[in-house]
Image (cartoon, rainbow, N blue to C red; front, side, top):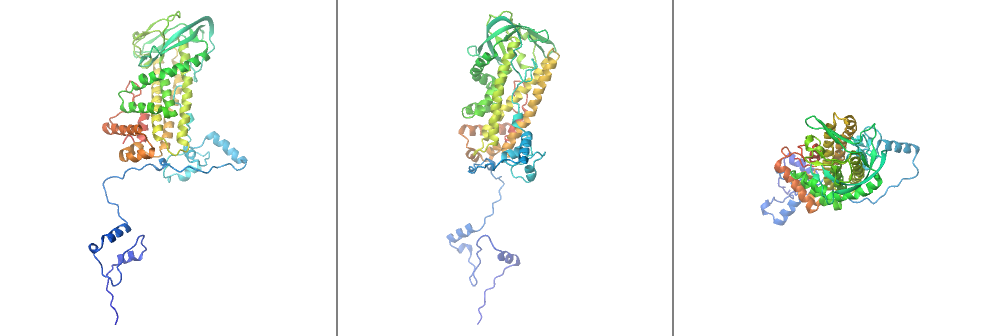
Length: 511
């Protein structure tokens, strides 16, 4: 007698699904075995079934937490080292020569990829439109083209400011004490701010004016004064003594020239304090702060403090009216340095500025292009903030300096020299910011601080102070709003800093 099998109804769609191989165990009822309701199965079996089948993610209105960008996650160190095999061929030497002339594009420099001299190199063209992380154009921007600080002197028509040694010297030598003043601040400490200069009288040239100060006030009046012809005779000895004296002034400049200037700007004040805290462990931040202090000092002016030099007289600046240039707005009487001495002091500051500019650019290049297990985005962000603030400050000062020198004897040479310096600043802003955005490669740390702060803190290896700073900046912007909170000011005047706003936006601070 034939055994009748129980009929199991399976629709056509279910039959197709059962015939296909499943990535997980499929529990089919055995032939001749009755179906058992789930409530009648033991708990252990239910747990096994739940673990063996895929679970659908629950629909939620909450957004997924942002994760650390892959390019900022720690990676294993490379153990292999590549070596050149044999001598370069003639074609290889020719290509190397062309690449030294044109430069490697930023993407090939980061990924150590082969580059060529096309407008868009082959390596970038190959991944154009399909790159997962590096989604930027092929660019050959160079950090070496960035200008962070002033290097020219418009008053003496010097594109690269340098000491003058062509004076027709007389036999009169003097030692004079100089007190340095910061623009918008006034004299520094008398105890530490006095510097002794060895000066010598010279015979002025008939073809060049080296003894007068001239400018135009806001009322359109041409004003000025003249001091006797004195200059620094031994510039080598001057520079050897001048640099240690500037180092003594740095703490006073940081407090009165930087922190007091931004005391009403929450983000700038927090950032500069964080930079000063981190400077002991960061050569980049230490050089950036020194560069900023020297830029402020280079916009200052000297006052003769001793009374032993004949001919140097007192000037009432208040009677000359207000000007757009901050350095000439003095509400007191003082005895300004003779023009040639002021030029020597200015050159001494600018030569030291060039050294710190080179330090900063080299350190930025190392942070961006060298292989680091942990990419220091926070340190680089603070440094970029300080440097962009400085560049905006010197740019605004240069524009106002040109304005107050127009329609004077030196107006044309000042405009010719300083305008080229301004053009360098304006070209350096996008260059520096392009390197910053390429370093981030889409990573927005402040945006991640809003959604997943603990992972940001852990993966970035941030200390407590750095993490607190990040959360404070996010809190300030979220509370006041990006549209209602202007970017940090660079001077007492309501000047908006366009590029610091772009820096914050690229890092995800502006929502």
